[in-house]
Amino acid sequence: MNIDDLSWQARHHGGVYPRMVRTLLELGQLELLIRAARERGDWNCAEAAARELCAAGEFDRALALVGPFAEIGWRAAEWVTAEIMIHRGESDEALAMVRPDAAELGDGHVCARYAELLSKAGRAGEAVDLLTPHLGEYWLRSRLVEVTEGQGHDDLVLEVLTREAERMERVESAACGRCGESCGTGRMDRWDVLLLISRVLERAGRTDEAVEVLRAERASGRRHPVNLPEYYAELLARQGLIEELGALAAEDHRSALDVYAKALEDAGRAAEAETVLREGIEAHDHPKDRAALMRLLVRQGRVEEAVETGRPTYEYYDCWNFLHWALDLLVDDGRPDRALEPLDGLTDEYVEEHEDQVRRLRLWLLGVAGRCKEGIAEATALNEREPGEWDTALAGLLERDGRTEEALALLRSSTHYLVRHELPDMLIRHGRPAEALDSIPTIAETRAAAERRERETAEQREQDDPWAVTGEFTVEPPF
Image 1 (cartoon, one colour):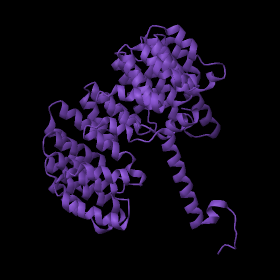
Image 2 (spheres, rainbow, N blue to C red):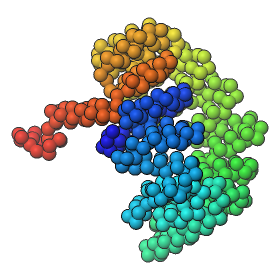
Image 3 (cartoon, rainbow, N blue to C red):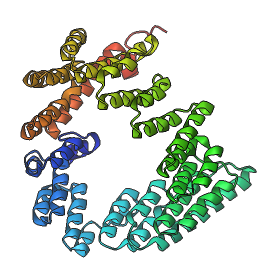
Image 4 (cartoon, rainbow, N blue to C red):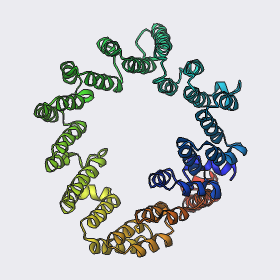
């Protein structure tokens, strides 16, 4: 292992990818992950296995596993080592080992990680002090709220956030005074702080105050970002303030209508919720309302109506997921042949624009419907025209047709980069986790392959358009 490869893995999820790590843990394959950490120098495996060992109280084994990574200076391993030591009851030693130096105190990422450890060690008050200088960054404000949850420091957090909100309001007022109009300087940050204040008040059991913070801001007449009324609507729903939520939905349909409808349903007023959503669709026909109605209908077992409700959105440029969702609903309902109908009903223009995606969905549905031979014939023909592009689809159909070894052989021989996860995933599905792990290239191998593809892409681009790559002309350009 070396720092360069580990850094590359962290950026690109090389080696044993995170989803496979989670799958192996769920299958009880801890020892396989330990082996991969030791033999491959794979940090994803080492971190997950160490945390699992720590949770089981096997602290020495966990420390031994991450030790070699920490020894070469891999910072992530040092953090995990400290976390394990805290769980072992060695908080002071752990915190001393990773305490930020003067330079690192200016790094929000380092402070956020150290604050998490302080909280785990029962020193959340120190975590608040550490993060307070960084509250100009929205994500660190959220981290402050996260690391102090359940630590008994809600009053302190509220005090810090309130001061921050007041400071931001002064900044905004001063800026607006200079330019003579409400220019919005600092407004987004202040709204973010108000949401966090409301969140902390709610978790502290001060729900009336939590509601009032957002109610007052909502009534101020200022313009707000979408997330403020949405959060306000969800807060009203959690507190059972359905009538107030209904008034908000009437005023701000896009932010609150679906929340209002779900609150009505949860209160046993499902018919009223359905009426509210259908009226909203009739008045505005927004995809969000259709999604809410689809969810309600599915919960009532009315899958066919849900699919028809979503139909007008299937060709919207930003609603591709609606079509996927409808097909999944029909497949889960045991009707994959019926799922082919919405696909076949797409316009020629849409199919032409999304040709590959539609074909892949069709091949998947043919397999699910048991029409594997038909799907295999189509995928084979596509692969003949575009070698390698359809290997994953063809392998999936072969697998569904009971020809697992043929499918595995195809994936092993494929050079298309999209198959890199398909082979281990298929082996996992067939109860062969050790083979699945062994089929995944090491970090160094994955990195070398990725860099080779980048070089080949750059070379091809240079051949196609040398001026775009080099910025130099070897001959006079034709313009």
